[in-house]
Structures are given as C-alpha cells and as structure tokens.
Image (cartoon, rainbow, N blue to C red; front, side):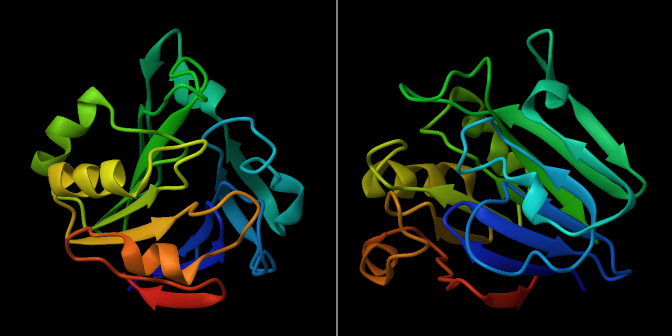
Length: 196
C-alpha cells in the first residue's frame, strides 16, 4: 500500500508499495532522507522547488513545471506504473503558464497535488476522475482561502481532502486546519505518515 508523508507547508512524499519514492514540492520540514526515484515541482517559487534537499537514487528524475507544461499543453508522464498527469494551476499570484498541479496515480490510488492555486475551470471535471486524495492550499494570501478551498473540495469530490499550505512562513497551523469546512477532511501534521 502506498504511503504519504507530510513534511509541512506544500511539501510531501509518496512511497509506493515497491519502495519507489516520489517527492512533491520539496521545501519544508524534515523527511528528505528516503532516496528519491522522482521529484515533482509544480512551479519555481522558492517554497516549492528545493530539490537539493532530497536524497536521490542514481538516475533520479526531476519533473518540473516546464516539462509538465509544454507549449501550453499539460502533459501526462508515465513513470513505469506511476502516472503523473499535469493539470492547470494558478491565481493572481501564480501564472497558469508557469504553474501546474499533478494527479499522481500510485499503487492504483489517485492523489491530486494542487500546487499553488485557486479554483480552476478544469476542476469541474475532476469528480469523474475518481480521486482518492486531494491536497489543497488555503493560506488566503498567495492562494485561495478556506471558503474557496472547501468549495474546490466539494467540486472535486475526492474521497479524502488534506489541508496544506495553510499559513505563509509556517509548516502547519492546527487552528486553520480545524476551521476548514471541507468534506471528508483528513488532517495530517508534519512528520506524520499515512496509508493511502
């Protein structure tokens, strides 16, 4: 069974049942010691792209927003039996031409890594994708706030919704996480690993 380890802020790690490791938006917290097979970067802001933090296996592949969004087209990248589908991300602080989210299929589970975003038009079609997990930002400064993030969760209809990127400069904020009125919310504190 795949696992998700939350470092804090917008950073997390996925581990497949066969031991392959995928980091998403490395920047915050601890837990970069498991050598990476793949590192995914949603955009080039400094709080999402610190790939040097991650231990890496020989041949580790880094997939950036530039590779995931080529000539204005969102790419789907097959990494053996891990699939990475780039999707639109953006808001007034993040250009959709330079930012992506990812839908990662690992051990049959679909995990939506929203990156830095507010509500996007393609989210209307996400319910049909059968997402298992959605990690949504909600700081209300650089991204959407609590209300809009809860609206996105209701539109996306993932089985479980994890609050991330809650407060600028903070790994995590329990009060904000508790206040988020999303359906099927799962609060994961930094340093905690959960089964997917």
